[in-house]
Length: 326
Image (cartoon, rainbow, N blue to C red):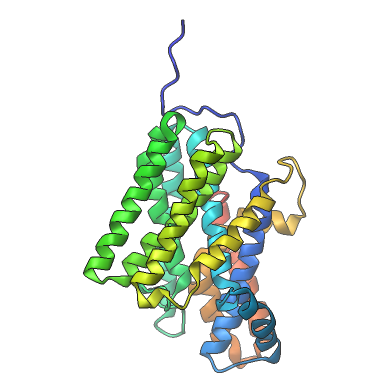
């Protein structure tokens, strides 16, 4: 009788790049541009166009999706990160998964940090600060990297003992949130609570592939939402963001999206957005955001067009150096 496969070997023959992620990732990337280059930049530089006010009054406020849909975009991206990285961890040997993840995530983040520091000398990038209010984009990237670290540590358990792996991840999150509450470190607590979003994406992948039954995955997903609500009660800084509302909306959109045909074809702009999404998010606050201000002397519409083109070019260069981000 042949011996069972090693736990670090793949047990599923599915593609790690699931086509069901195209819609949420593409929509989230567009919403990132709308929220941070549109709403946030305009607000912080004294602009308040009528169309932006109308969208806020008629859509953002009634739906409870503030920050010009910024957190909805972040939640969609983080859940997609959990879905995608779990697929990669389950379909690749552990060493290959860890090496590829480090190569595609860390050097681009370092390049973005250098760009942010350089632009801060003569322009106005989003601050490189560990503060959700100051720079939600940087904060969401740190959340994604924190989940990636947890997944690398627990990936050997996923093929045969996925509940142990997920519970271990949630135990680390809960412990960190508790310590942050006791020590009154709100930003650490918010980061820990937001790590539940990629964990929900992880549970979604496990459930879709038949590895996790409903009665196993549902309580863990509910526990993730409970941690988001606990975070709002523990920290005043988290109470105005309505994290659970956007998280539930993001999960519903994810559930609709991942039911799509894995072989479905997508328009080239969608393919481009999805394959460069990580690089676009990394460069948004440190390249596109400051360029809008630098070129504002020309005229605002022209500065936006040029900034978007340079932003896309930067993402394309990183894509060619480090490979597809999804």
